[in-house]
Image (cartoon, rainbow, N blue to C red):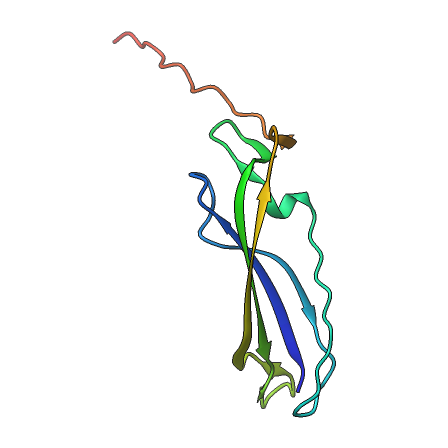
Length: 120
């Protein structure tokens, strides 16, 4: 059957989410014993982390990329579409990034509002 391949990234950085989807792809419908190559791509933003000041940057460190294929097996009766099925073929890779942070963009952070004094 058809499979969807998902790629997730995680790291030990303080501001990193537990896991983030960075890419996905589909395989053609396969018969038992057949295989296919599914190419996955991501951009720098896939590895970017935000700091407390709203700066999104790729930082040095080791990142874990985990991929899995989800075989599409169950039919949705009302629409004739497929829904998630059985997870197969887990794969992990480690990527180490070196050097200074590469800033992708910065979100302006508003300063805290000053408290107003009101006289009664």
